[in-house]
Length: 123
Image (cartoon, rainbow, N blue to C red; front, side):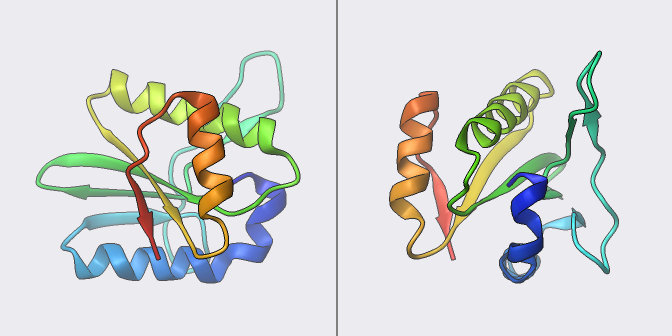
């Protein structure tokens, strides 16, 4: 999710981290208080900063996770997802999206627009 929406969704990120901990993910970094913040990526010639919501490892493979909640800025969210998806393919990592009830349709529409796999994790 983008920085504007992050304030409203710390509870969802906490649920996602708990979900990952229960499934033996290690070295979990999350963009919430109490966890180490994942590495941020800066766009050249701009002050745009991209930070994954959650980064974790399992079986030696790094996973990037995003939380999908309805957003007022869907284009900014699409560019973030596209960047993280390309980054994960370049680094031979995995990219997955968490979503909640009430946000499935929004998430499916976003994934359709980006031609991305629809393997979302439902909380």
